[in-house]
Image (cartoon, rainbow over all chains, first blue to last red; front, top):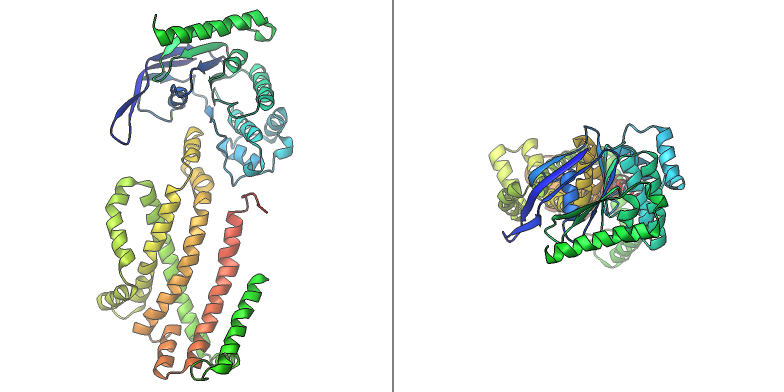
Length: 238
Length: 245
């Protein structure tokens, strides 16, 4: 289980001013479940993800990652090493991966043909997938995804979304997904955390019953309505 | 190939100039080559060439190692950078001649002073270049390395050094030319062998042919070093960059 109890996060800008990046955000996520952090752009979702990843220890509160397994973060930009090819990029991050595992992962994300390519030779969509493979190759106990579909065209985003949901079904891993797109959140998440505009506070937690593939359009619309209502309430106050 | 044509052009211009000029002021390439052969046959050329080359290599390696290490630290640590920056500016603006003369007076007319003085002249340039490289590196990749718990060695080898490679190459290229020029001054002032010493002799005799016979082989060796060491390293370090037409 992932437990997040943040009471606040401030940082001091270059001019010496204090900024509130996050307010109170407290939630739990069961093992193997997917949680989506949904909120307007710039509300502090990425900051929150960086705190969960342990990249920034300066905050008030406590975060308990699940068990002791490794954690993998897929950044908004692929952040591959440009001077290493696809395979090397994966192996440097996950030195213990076997050839069979690597081949299977590359196959699952249709990357087999690009194994020897350098990141500069890949489209953004392909590079994002490599970044995803790099994360999965670690066998993470906790997977953090930051806007995995941002700046991809609709077709590419849909394809990657389908691939990720297949992977998540095939081998459950506790996943926190940051997105501003409600559809992505509804299609992937077991639990949606609705955040307010900056500084983000948790407005509502919405559980989505599985299996969502068979969910009716009505049900999907109802969840969408719930999220929008929570955001609206958060903006105007109860 | 284009480089070869460009070099041939220099030779042609020289020959053309030599036709019109007083041979005492500008001897023809052939005269210089004959003088070179004469010096080579007596073994003098190799003796002096070797002495200078050793000093260049020693001073270059010393300066690159120390300068790069300091530059990397200064590029990474703001406090150290602010403390050391005034020293750096002082050293950058200290004339080479002042460093050389002081080194000879303080340490003595020996090899340590000679090599040390040359290295000290190159170190600030290496610091500035590598510090720039450190500052220009991709912070996103550092964060990725941190998130994926890269070991210090893995980070150094796969994240940091590849980013610094172009800066190492730039620093090596300018360093090689700077170091060998200063080595000649050092030899002229306080050594009894080396190309600089021989050039001083040629100067006292006003013998331009002898001067060129010693200077040219060294320029050629430096050109060769650049071609067989620096350029292949650059090509290797940037092999991942997509080629643009």
